[in-house]
Length: 240
Image: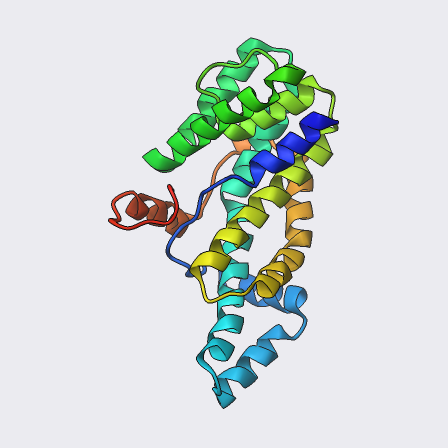
């Protein structure tokens, strides 16, 4: 269905990226996550640091580990989980304009910074315009992107679980793409990170299925603070 393709393509146009790549979670969770995802990649990083024949050889494995930890937290405890929960509820309320308005207002209020909110609203407007030829539900002008995607998918009877997973996949791939451009990280390394995040993506997608709007909340404080700092930077590659 054309609308399904638009959901994926529009999701990859997200421009959210932060400038601080420190891990936000506990060391214990990082160790378990990295070990299960990379299957020995940490040993390669250790060997590279010992030999140190080339700066990129030392930096890239360490950058992969930090990016994995950073994104795993955002997915499990930050924007990834919040957006997917909102998307699911918008999907279920696709034919209820009053409920969609309430969900959109809540979604706008979850943005941690001015630019993140503006970005979500602008992408929501762009997405609604893009799917207009196929039809869209009655949505308020100020509809964040995740809510717009969920509502349109529900309106067109696209499966809720598939929509949620596709949204998270595109969300993660976009952040990795931005990191590849900003960090000493190659395309192949970026794909390895995306592959390693497959299980966390599916896990968050499944967990949000039973989440209520009251369950929305996050603990990615470094990500939020970095987004706020980003607003006042003189030179930037991304809008937020």
